[in-house]
Structures are given as structure tokens and as C-alpha cells.
Length: 180
Picture 1: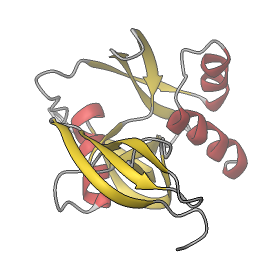
Picture 2: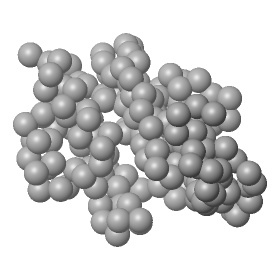
Picture 3: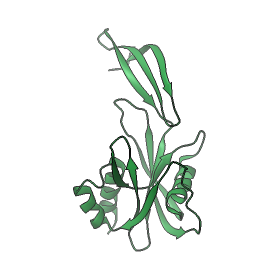
Picture 4: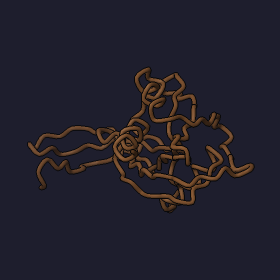
């Protein structure tokens, strides 16, 4: 057994939804004991740092029911089955903001909540943006407003917790380090 590895003894499927599945695994621990793990499975997602020619960041404002509040966030969305993350990034950018990017660069990927979920988020930088007429195509249950802010404005929103999610905070830090 690899160091710290937990072997699955049994797995019980609890729920399947549009965005996630939930299962409960019984595992054998490295010390020989057993425990249970509640696991959310997710197909993965993308997030896009969309940077205008005048160095403003395109963000969306939307209500987040689990938090019971509205946040400003960089555009993001779930991968469709078998979809390349770069294609998801292009699709989500246009659907949520109406922008297309001539230049799309993969930056990194990271797990969002590895303590209970397997969701991986692919982060892209989108530049040379063009606003497409009738480009926005929100899902029927999606309500967002689109804004463009400077990095300094985003930092202020982060301090006031109007921005309060890791992908957007990561984007702000990335831009502070790489734009000058």
C-alpha cells in the first residue's frame, strides 16, 4: 500500500444530479482501521481570466444559493462529457459574457475541494477579446451581469468579500504577478 493510501472496501451510490454525484465509500486506513468517506464526483470545470485590451478583467455577478449571497467572479463553467477544457473555456466565455478570445492560454489546474470532491478546475487566460453581437447565451436558470474592472478595483472587492471565491482570488494574484 502506498503511504497514506486508503483502499476502498465498498462504495454506495447516494445521488446523481446535473452537476454532481454523491457516494459514500467504506475505506481501509493505513493503520488497518476502517472509516467512511463522503465523496462528491464532478466532471470538472474551467475558469477564464478574460483581459480586455485596456487591462480590465471581465467578471460576472451572480447569486450563489449555497452561500445565500451574490458574488463577483471570473467566468467559469462545467465541462461537458468528453469536451476539451479549452473548448469549454471558449464556450463559457462567450455564453456568459458575449466575448470571444483570439488568444486563449492554459495557465494551470487545481482541485477545488480535495477533502470531499474530485472537481478539477482548469484556468485559462483569454486576451484579444471581441464582443460578439448576441454572443451571450445563458442557461435558462442562469442570471448574470457582466462587468469590467481594473485589478485595483477587484482587490477592493476582495477585501469587502464581494469577491470571495478561490478561483477569482487566484486570478487577481496571477494578474498582480504577471502584468506590469
